[in-house]
Length: 271
Image (cartoon, rainbow, N blue to C red; front, side):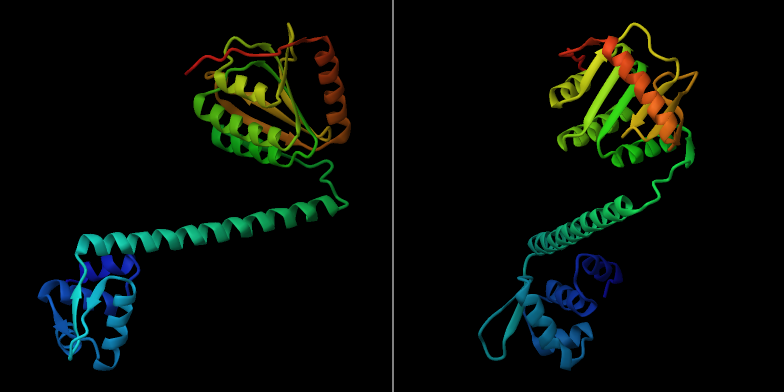
């Protein structure tokens, strides 16, 4: 019997004996249980359990004769049924994992918030585009109250723009305050316009500090280092949790914000 066929059916959820019995019926047509056992080398003591399982899964049909005979369901239909069952099982597992992940996230968040140590004085950095993005997204996820963002130009690559916009949209949906201060909005896209509609506050000022920075909850800071040969890429992100520095930068942001011009709407440019 073709081991490859048995392996393929096994990946779709059949046991070894079930796969052998189905393939035997597919090759020989209508057979009794004894004949299936003989042709497939399945023990006589197991054959009825195997065939009944295939019948229950609508992969084999049985008549009411004596002795009872069995016939396979057409292979294309059988495979579709196996696939449907397998996908449903995976979706159930995914839902279970998502519930577990949600519970774990809540439990860990409570643990973090109840801790007396807020990580004061801790600093870390991430070098290269992907690692820098991951660190920045991680710190965004830790925000509880507010995010202040200072950039010169709103000009980032499309891949990072999609991820960045999605994360900000999630935060805005929770009611988090997110403010963006920029000197150049000429590269603004439809995604920024959608974020404004979702609650992002944007103001434009003639000049911002040369160093791009983000203040999270007024207690930690992320400094963005742009790739000098590719302005749309992040070269590195430096994250440090220092209340005094964060407070000073937050105050600087608020002063610039007060002097900046509100941007009530942004006409995006379709990419």
